[in-house]
Length: 239
Image 1 (cartoon, one colour):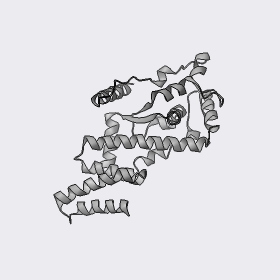
Image 2: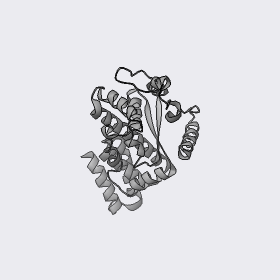
Image 3: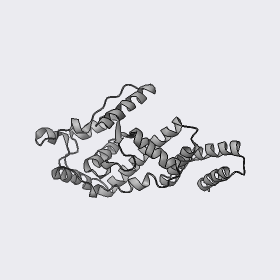
Image 4: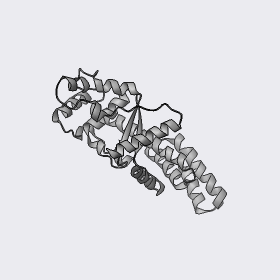
């Protein structure tokens, strides 16, 4: 919980620094009634015919959902039915997902990307399978799975939508790291590889590869191994 508060404080400071209004946070574990009865039924999905419940209305009205990733590359939430349902409901409600990380999580992601690690994010998101997810209350799990299985595309569609949304959220966080450390060529190249190879985002990867190549050409010369490696990376994207 202390990590969550720290992440939200950092997020608030960042939003204010960008000139945005001070954010207000709706934390699901506090706002959704956890006790059985009429109040919980109003907040939570209860079968296929009840898609207009309190939780989904709030998700749709906020416009943005922040994901607190305590462990960026192995988040516990990806095995929890409620967490996956919340992300899916956010996507279906048109809300933008934003990844919030602890300093340790940011450093973990930075180290993996800067070190030339491949399949950094895909290794995590490929494990998402709402059919194998768990919930503390069996009735909650039954209600969630009933809604998901009856939705267009069923479980497969939910898995795909959640994976894509999470990939995009982490990619945005990685781009922010590059903006914060523009001189870190290893990080810039790692993010470019992630965008290109894991997400198929050629337009996002191209300028990063070009920037790294330009620096190596200017600092190391056209025949240096660093320059040739950067040239090969760019060529692999353009071919």
